Image 1 (cartoon, rainbow, N blue to C red):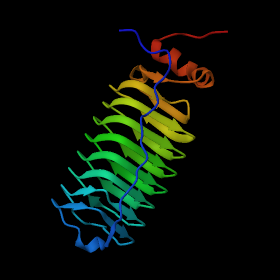
Image 2 (tube, rainbow, N blue to C red):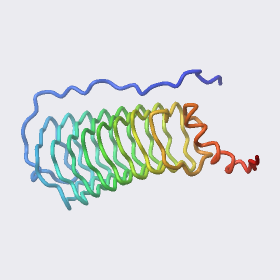
Image 3 (spheres, rainbow, N blue to C red):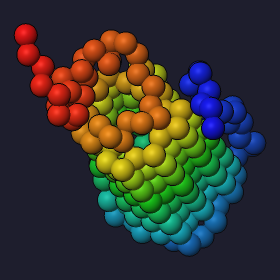
Image 4 (tube, rainbow, N blue to C red):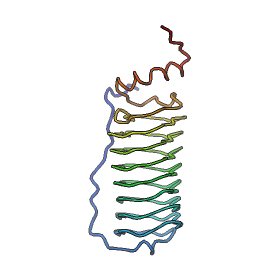
Length: 220
């Protein structure tokens, strides 16, 4: 099959939430479904919210340290100024989600389904996306110390004005993944870069790593 000559951008609609009902973070329970709620402030630290579903919700200024959101579902939901030093969202589902102005330390989002999602103006120490599926995802104005994309299946993922200290791409399957807006300190498992888009400057900077990976000796 002939590939498109132009990298496709993420397809993202504007998230418009209806009139929301104010709620208290204390009322949230695991395996429950919540719709149309706005939670401002509150502390979810240490809480187990396994299997919890948020639909058309907004969480603003919430603290979530060592919160468990395994198998959770976020649908048409906005997370703003989330403070989460450690967040376990393994095997969760994110669809039509906005993550804005947030500070997250270790985000374990292994084996997750992430679609039509944007992260803007946020800082991460470590994101573990191993074995996750990403489709139509945008990172903009974000800083990520360590980004693990091992085993991901990623389609139409873009980075705009972002920086990552290190990126791992072991066994990644990429289609239309635009890395031109990502300043990277180091990349491991270069064989996983197939399907990514780089600019000429990035290719030049990575030339020694590519040569080493391919067993090319550069002399003179």
